[in-house]
Amino acid sequence: MANQLTANPSLLIWGMIFGAIGLGFFIYGKRQRAAIPLVVGIALSVFPFFITNVYLLVLVGILLVIVPYFIRL
Image (cartoon, rainbow, N blue to C red):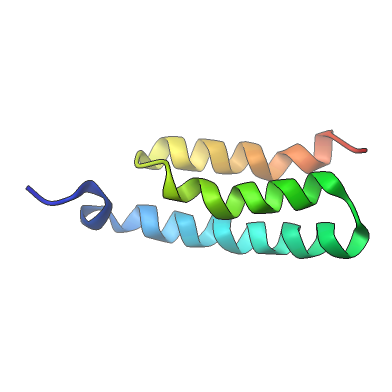
């Protein structure tokens, strides 16, 4: 039986997409000295390693992407 991570390329693609968005948030947060985009950027880059369900990965990724628009410090 194949490992679920190697059998589903959509996990890799979505992980790369959210990782790239996370890198953008991280760089923006670091340059602007804004804590929320910085933390969201780190979370977007790390969370795909821990989620193996594609639908949950997309849901959590979308929720993390919209967090900085609603929480401003």
